Image 1 (cartoon, rainbow, N blue to C red):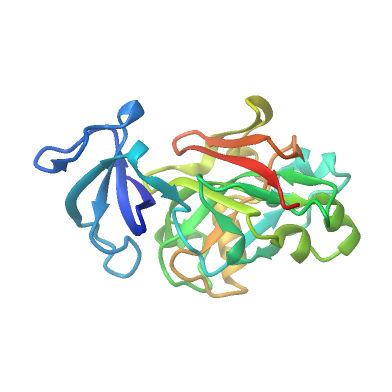
Image 2 (cartoon, rainbow, N blue to C red):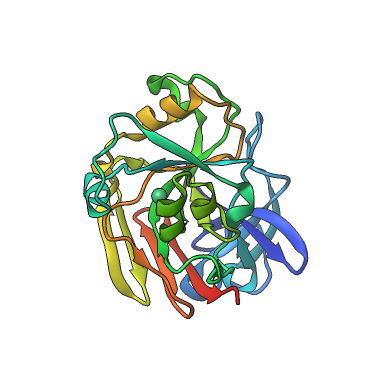
Length: 273
Ligand code: MG
């Protein structure tokens, strides 16, 4: 099931995205381009009784504005989790998972622009990543129970001010600017994420092309490691690391992260000044 968060005018809702209108539901304008429609959910899809009830209203995806599919309280991220990416930046693969945080205020959705803080950074990079979306409050999750706490997966771009990452030592500024965490286009809840193709394109030129099977620390290991440290809340997000091929973005670029079985997250790039 694909869970989207979207706006119709000023109203924000959750919905289930699928290829065609289900029988017995109201279809307002027929399907959008590609035949995708979104069936509105009553309430939200998170929480202990995570049963999805539909209101019966359905929109063509092209008629709504897709938002970030979730508003996490925090984004936990894993650094240097693909060998070839660690090497390309001159680093050794870490001896245990390397974790950092991005602020919740960095999150944007598919319709939003990545804003380069061009007065503060001369080098802003894309990092296409598989993102885990958690469905439950959890702490100290053993690897064997990790599937129980995962709600689904989405595409992420761990946008990074590479020059500030090097000069600061701490990564909070380099990873924490507003708009530096695009998420979307929706959450896929039925997916085995162990071996998915991940590609990142800039202006339709392929820059990253790898598979999640090449993660140094797999999903169960990462989640267990992170939840040994901090409590995860429903809707929190874990970025699993980027493969080789990272590079700079400039104003006017269009950057897309595509993951097999999920979809494509595309954002345009603008300068702040
Ligand atoms: Mg990253």
